[in-house]
Length: 136
Image 1 (cartoon, rainbow, N blue to C red):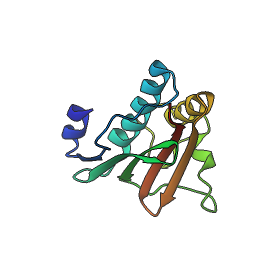
Image 2: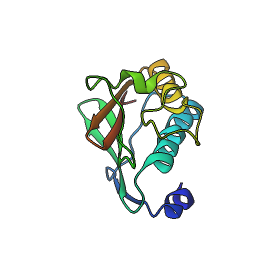
Image 3: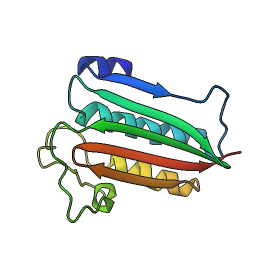
């Protein structure tokens, strides 16, 4: 996604453990989940900002998160982020030209099928997606 991020002047700040982290997951499905999350950031992050990507270990879990500042307000009802993972839903009213509204729904469903936990958090214009996998 370097090229897509560069087009919007997005800088990736990556924080990874020094050693390899192995999780119980289907490689092709995991790729699709990550692709959808990075694509979401590339489409909807505020230009000239940073996208934070982190992988950390805690107990027997691997926790992946991706954070970005949204270029437009994310419309939530009472802070409920569950609607963002519904099919054909976009969190920003202005999201009318790019995407189908399926990316986060697919990412969540594939994560759950692989036994992971999937969480979205929105704090003002900060968008955070976190996936927690059991380590292999």
